[in-house]
Amino acid sequence: MNAQQALKTIRAGKIAPLYVILGKVDYLADQLRHQLIELIPSEERTMNVGRYDMETTPVAVALDDAMSAPFFGERRLVFVNHPYFLTGENKKSKVDHDLESLQRYFEHPEPSTILVLIAPYDKLDARKKLVKTLKKQATIIEINQVSERETRQYVQTALDAKQISIDQDAFQELMNRTDGQLGLIMGQLPKLMIYAAQTQRIELAAVDALVTKSLTQNVFDLVNHVLRYQTQAAVALYHDLVAAQEAPLKINAILLGQFRLLLQVKILARAGYSQGSLASTLKVHPYRVKLAMQVVRHFDQAALRAAYLGLLKTENQMKTTQRDPELLFELFMVQFVNERRVVSGRRA
Image 1 (cartoon, rainbow, N blue to C red):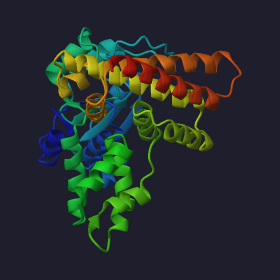
Image 2 (cartoon, rainbow, N blue to C red):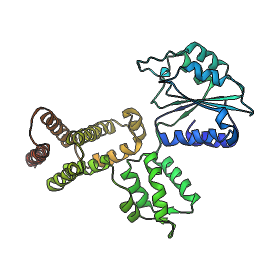
Image 3 (cartoon, helix red, strand yellow):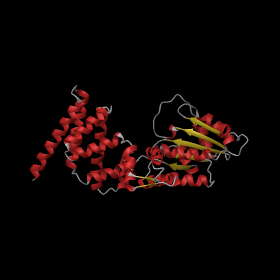
Image 4 (cartoon, rainbow, N blue to C red):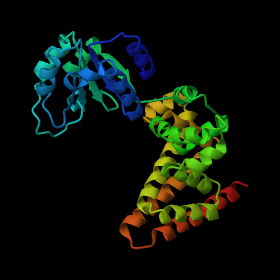
């Protein structure tokens, strides 16, 4: 079940005794958490809503709460955060968890309690008995990936509530500047809606004026400058990022990551992978894959590989020499452009 379906069923009063909110989209986790809390009357929440972090609190404490009768109310709501013991990670912890009691609770959940496990992970370990039982007994809400269409729906719902529209080019730029991350987009909407209070319309100029480009988006622009042999523009943007206190090694690492993704997308797309299967296989946000596919159509694999290897060499030099990082990036650009022109000349 996805978040939209879950919110709809909860609002309709169709409540399960056991939920798992699985994924890393904090905005959706917060929406689901808020909707579940709304089930408990405000005057009862102090006594009937519990929150427990498994990284610091034994699960037995949460279970004691979950198995208690509601205090002058119909329901008790218990949130169990970071249940890392449901994953495959070998986490060292001083907290002793009674997983046998948890297993028994999963098999026979308390009817008057809503137990919600908030698991900010990519997946659970399907080999574990606890997880197998959860899959049978619990309503699992997956919030790891949000498509561009779903993101648009969330944005549109928020804007419709204020009777505000957004131009297509403004929405696209908002997606670009936030890397398509739903939480970041929803965080930017309030100031855009205030800006559009008079016109009831969010235009591209508003996004340009109010939404700052993320480092990843600036690096994406840098990637385009590199691949188009725009040395002056690439070097100028690199200098701007360093002047904005971005660490050269961090910039280079993100650049490497972008070119690695472009190479992977180029190779797998040639092998017949679709945009959706690429996002799933590479475990990358679908919007990043969409942008990567738009880029790789215009450049050959050899150029992508040459840029990647050149940046790998630059990173090694940054780590092992005292040379100025900005000079090293300039040298990378000069060498990359010259090498590609030689290759192009041979082909001609």
